[in-house]
Image (cartoon, rainbow, N blue to C red; front, top):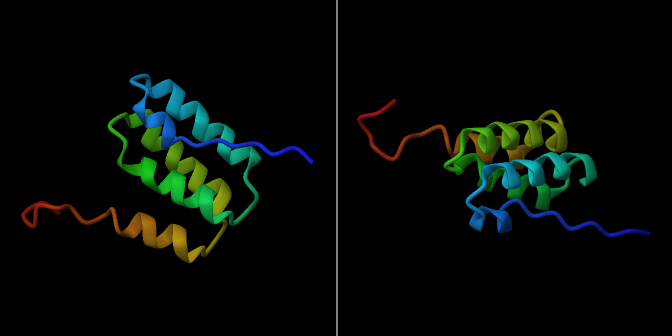
Length: 88
């Protein structure tokens, strides 16, 4: 059995968004459906400064979480509210 470790959040230290984006794209391929660790990592990347990384995080959540996954829905919903109450 082969163990593959991919962590886009560890790659966030890399200034190149392509590295973080590639890590997410790999994660969606190697992670099993419903993998909580992959959902957590992808969720953290929803707040990345790079738009491509954010989009890859959404695609990863869709691919890994599966329909109706409570952890993924909570992660996304928690980021829909803006910290500034005046912004909707």
